[in-house]
Length: 293
Image (cartoon, rainbow, N blue to C red; front, side, top):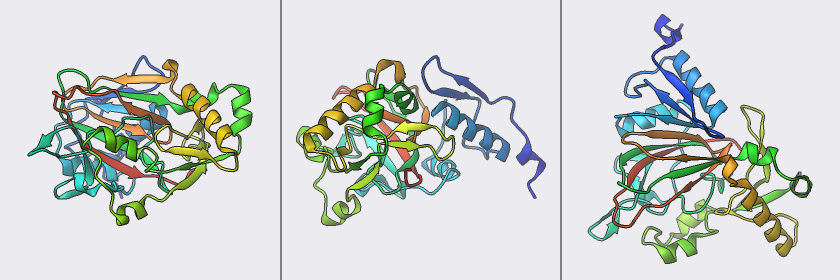
């Protein structure tokens, strides 16, 4: 039977919606301390309502980030295991830092609009990114509300994609990214086997809030199934352009010790870029979701 404290709500925790099409900040919550079931339920509800939560001033360890992340479900380990944090395989280092001429993390993560791990049979429920070292300039992250993108999709595009499915693959832009940066190592046969192409609905239904959302991206979606290649490419290009219109976006300007938690079933995101002479390092955990329907 839960203790009384587990049922109590901490009134000092505030959730403030941004003046944006999505997103809210969580004030007064210290994730280094145990979170009551009541407060967890409140955070969970806010995540579903706002799609992106920003937890301010989180001075937590990687282990504490993993512990909090696991309350939402099992964690997924990125295929580039060489960029996992030592001792914490669930934590992906997202960083442009080079040590002894070698990258310590994935420095070009988020170069194209995408939903994390959409290339898996069970894509991500959500991702949590915790700031460790931030640049003085640049380094912003953009998020696009894909529920709004679907709600406002022109009728001719709705008819064109209704009931259709598309292929997603991790390798879609991999060679292109390899040419422009040192952060994409050659994949082993074992790694390639872990990221075989998958097929998902173009429009998915969120399993918790019941809302529909576009679920294709310029990074991982390669083609629409059972459609000629030229028609598929033209239709995907139209959808991509629509899905990231300014009126769907929230731009996150990072502060020290921010941890951002977004719903990959509801949003896409993009790294706005960091100057080469500015250091940036963040730790990412990724929660496993369900097969899209």
